[in-house]
Length: 409
Image (cartoon, rainbow, N blue to C red):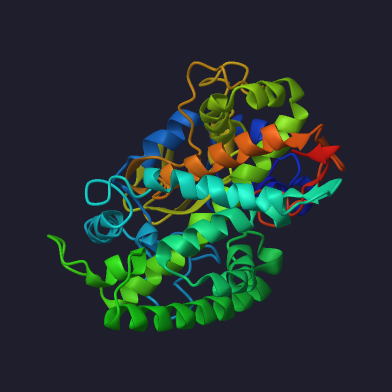
């Protein structure tokens, strides 16, 4: 089986509902590279984890030489500087520390946990809004609006503007798909969406310069700590990153989570009776059905040997996180969903210096949403299994999740 056929199968929409047999096949060749200009696919847990911590692996597109550039790792298409997840130390570290200063410890240690009550209220309002419905679309009615509302409020986006973001975010996310058959069209649409989103955020930034508020945009514009201040362009790039990454992965985490629980009704019933189980459920979901399946934007800055294979300097590497999360050499019975698993050290949020910036918020959102849905939906069941999926192979999740219920408590 050639590298092209394997990667094409993984990115083929026909396999989106269940890519795991392909990952099982992929792990038989832990470092797969059969096309001269193609990426190296890394699929086993310990290799992926090691590379996520390896300073010889770069996130900076300028380091790609072998095999050229691809549509996933091209420059930012808006004129904005790269977000910090596409940079290496020390610049990555500087920008991430500044951003973290307004997001969490040590400067804002209670910002996320202090939102718990507000998060509960938002989910309650969304479920209340379902009324007497006997069939709901979990994505459109709960899983999408919940994290969008949260990240917009954190950044300081006015409530009346929240609905505008879907028209921008969907094409941006679609542009991340590594399927070259739709790359040109997706890239063009994503570029226009990023431009519009950047222009909108620039207007908000100008307002915050004149009138600071209690939000992250204001913090980013007025931060003058040991690392200095972000430029206006860096604030815009960081804000675009937070708006997209701050909700898209959480939508998938909640949706994949409810889909999995409906397939494991005994665990759903346990959660209904014990909301505290949501903590372990979410961690196992991040292993079993992660919202991010692969990290394509990695490059070797020197020759590296992985599993006996020498990867040349300048080569592109795809880290297949979802394949690593089900590696039988790391997890016992990896294809079974088991929140009682004693060791759930997953790759769902990556690892190393680029580990997910918003992980604490995503965890809390998913825990609250799944616990409330389990408690309040009476006899929920899937209308269609598998449900229709989004085209994207990187950020994998259902586009709709129709659920029939006997009532809403």
